[in-house]
Amino acid sequence: MNIAVAQINSTVGDIGNNTQKILEYCRKAEAKGADIVVFPELSLCGYPPEDLVFKPDFVRKNKYFLRKLKEGIGNILVIVGFVDSKDSHYYNAAALIYRKKILHIYHKIILPNYGVFDEKRYFTPGGILPVYKIRENSFSLNICEDIWRGKEMLKEAYRSYPFNFIINISASPFNLGKIKERQKILEQRAKQFSAAVIYCNLVGGQDELVFDGGSMVIDTRGRLVRVGKRFREDLFYFNPSVLYGSSSLILNKVQDAYEALILGIKDYVKKNNFQRVVVGVSGGIDSALVLTLAKYALGSRKVEALIMPSRYTSKGTLRDAQRLCTNLKVKYYLIDIENIVESVRRSAVIFASSQLSSLTSQNIQARVRGLLLMAFSNQKGALVLNTGNKSELSVGYCTLYGDMVGGFGVLKDIYKTMVYKLACYVNRRYNHPIPSAIISRPPSAELKAGQKDEDDLPPYKVLDEVLKLYIEKEMPFDKIVNYGFSRSVVKQIIQLVDRNEYKRRQSPPGVKVTTRAFGKERRMPIVNKFRYS
Image (cartoon, helix red, strand yellow):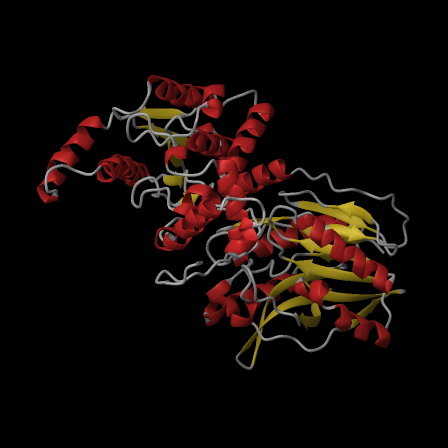
């Protein structure tokens, strides 16, 4: 029995091309002598389809292409995910296809409804976990959450008809450390049922989500024996009757974050049919990292930069911004914004009692830069990559319609301390494209003379640790203080996070990397008078 695991990158709604890709992988697997080929959850229509499920034409088209797919299947059992419908109910489903026939359709039973998942909004749960027999083998087929929380369900199926292996098709999004969680769950299930587990995960970027692949096979003793590539499409094979040596996962959080960002940028640009991107490059570390990631995700020819100095931009910062673009072979445009800023200041004085406040003056600079970036976007059809990081976005240290402009927030879920780690990582990997002065210089928005981020914020090392406890772990005020942080610092940070929800709601989507990103996973009201005392 030879089982092929086809870890593919589907595009939501591109059902015809997804079907073509599935057929190509079926032919490759059949040519290699596979008896079964397994595809990820909802791979026919793409995951997550969200409210597309409520469009009857979408569901009909996905079922139409399932029938088209069926006609191309020969002597190989194909397991593929799609949206099924019956009597006005929709199901997250898997079809078993063999010799131009749909042998059976399985409906996912346990529907996740937490974090980024909202499946109970769309789907009706299935009710039966079948066991299938193929030659001398029997196997259980289930979908994603079924294996995470379906231990008792699997027990019941096993009592009725013991199985040799479990096939789980999945669309499990990436976050740092997630793959070890998956491995642990799959090892537990393999040991509990003395059955090998074949786990096929989706790969690719979809809006804020990145699916990292990492499909795997756990043998009957609970050992990891086969692992798919991370962040790339893959096709690999497993034979339950063959004794394999154990495999291991090589984990590096900084590298994983880098790969997730690269894939997120690449697929967001490609799947939305953008031909190029533009980055506002300041000479600071955030824009330097975004430009570097864009270059290695898309290639230099598809990336351009605007360098927009004002009177407060130091000579060193300007020089480093230009050197960065040269190192990366990225075309850049140098636009001195001082005259534009001064013109806006003069016009704005009409509604000021005497002179503009420092904050107003600073934000005019940021908004002039945002205006030029969006003008470039309109003129050239380029997607603006936003350069703000999670630390700044958390506490509102950013300007609406200024440095917050853009179509995609590359660093939206990357804390400032991780920005530095990633900058050092790309420098080691690519022969130091980011000038060392950008990494060593104290961070500053350079919107007024002598400005430093730490004039307004706690040191980033402290800020990021408190943010992680408050946002990702949802710890209350007193518990965070018990970690050894100053009460006044914790109170300042929490107040800043709570009162800047209105800004975050207006930020562009960005790649999810942590266990709790802003967006679907954290739904706080904008009007909110609750405060920690």
